[in-house]
Amino acid sequence: MGIHYKQANIHWNYFLAIEKDFETLSRYIEFTESNNQVFSIELARLLMSATQETDVVLKQICQLVNPKGKAETINDYKEVIINHIPEFIGESIHIHRFGMSSMPWENWGGKSNPDWWQANNKIKHQRVTHFELANLKNTFNSIGGLLISILYYYNQILRNDRGERLSWKETTNVLKPSTALFRLQNDYYQEPGEWTSIEW
Image (cartoon, rainbow, N blue to C red; front, side):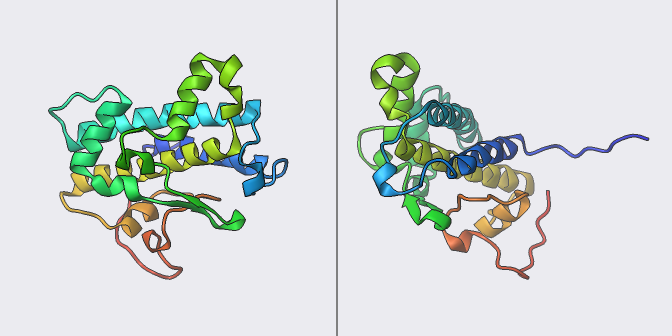
């Protein structure tokens, strides 16, 4: 007997795996402001995994919104996104369970790249001298930055497939299973019993 497969949402599955590992860490590190600077090998692994995946997803977003352009670096991504989807940088992420929230892309409103992105580069290239940057704060923001990137990516994919702008509720509804910890603002999600016709 054969197995029937639908195309997997590979970036979504990757995010969920990272988020699951981050949730496991909450049993060993209390997610509270006084622990923002706690660092570890596991936090470094998650920070670097999330940032690397964000790089992959941002490149694809840039190709979708500006097909004739060539975005290869974080500065290229910033220029394309600010010009085509400026609301991206104002998105906030939340872990209601621990009372955590932030705007991971807020730095793009100025001249610098996100702190967590810079931390990843320093950890990657100068780990001995910058290992303390693999901390809870940077890891939280890197995973949140990835979530925002992935939701914008799938929103654009669905929009291109259907030729129309889709609501965030329609986008988050097709990404299953739902997140365990991280969320964007509440009105991006369906309420129990609310119906939508969008399917993947």
